[in-house]
Length: 524
Image 1 (cartoon, one colour):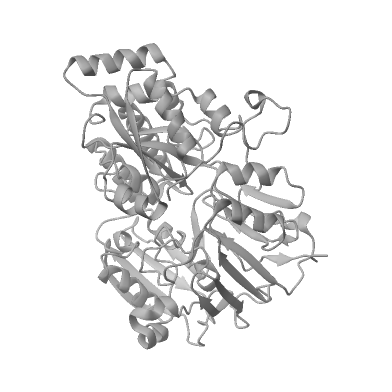
Image 2 (tube, rainbow, N blue to C red):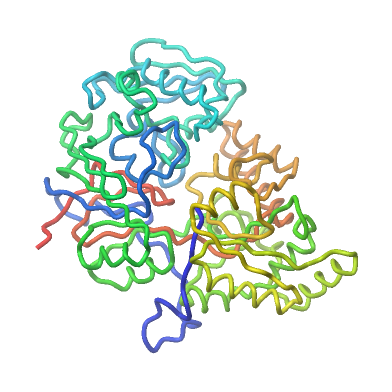
């Protein structure tokens, strides 16, 4: 998802405070609320959610960022706060042969919202859809499966083309990332065919009641939900509110109870509002400048290093992030087991003289260091900051801006840029890091390629040994950093923000949310 960090001056700073003296942001309830301190859950009520866009489809085999999908589809596996996959609707997931064959055991008595059983055949039918559809966001996972077999009604066996220790993770990913873990009723697939995306039937805690596009999506409690006593809510209503200011105003005035915050602007304001709760963690990955490695001038490492060295992160923090930016100099956050200090030590520091020297050397060899920076039409302040930094080292940077839809499709996915910006948070290294850095990766928009990085990423996906996986990702971080594959400058600011009456939130670090335990205290 492309990020627009629109701030001017010291937006979000308390009156009279110097933004340069403000501390960087830190994690606040990064994985959800504390059930023990929230009290006894109360049943009833309808949660009103403001999302940043309307859904395109509820079909898991169709690529789209649907923030409402998790209410109708539970996941066969879920990620723990440590980023490991564990059974959820599934009861077990085991490999008898170090990752070549996997057996998934399902819980008995789980039914789809149409009353049909979730059984091994239903899982096979759903996974086969991802195998058959090359455009499915989960196709890249499904095509690793050589064969599937229904062992008994509650057991399905997967035989892979090669061992894969991370295979359980592909059943735990969020809807937008592409997942094999959200399954549709085979009866609904047979009834609705390609229109099943407008008629979702899953095993989740809520059933679709009405979808008026660009207005609202309403869900009601699934009284036959497999977790006894849940959900607590009577229903959920999702409202598309694409404008950031409008969405934030809607939660502050009580029109909605819950919003997805993509930007520092929302996060900083919410942290200062006593009527709101914030769920946020900086995590790994984050905000970055994206180089196009296949075209000049950034096919030359000297120019990539010049850009990194030219950006004064302290000035960037003050001018764009209210002095609270969480600076980044590596793929993984320093708290991650996959981070190595060597990667941070090797990262180029702010040095205008060195940056000018690199630009002059590139120009002396016949290169043209001037380039065009492409971004969304809401990133004017950020683009002007980068433009000024480039001018300081003798580069003429032109700016072209696009609406979000055009930017995502034509610029990023089309690879039509020299330099741009992007956001990518990391719940779990696989498959996110491979998507970003592997040759041909689905989010490797800049066409970065390093055979050794590819080998290490493949090793990390295949191994069942955590120590081997950790070492591989540490080396990926170091090598991609030395290559300056991406120009990290900040961790992410994606958050979930609720009214204080909302309790029971469980979230992934990338802000994907599960709703079966959400409950509302009295709004009075």
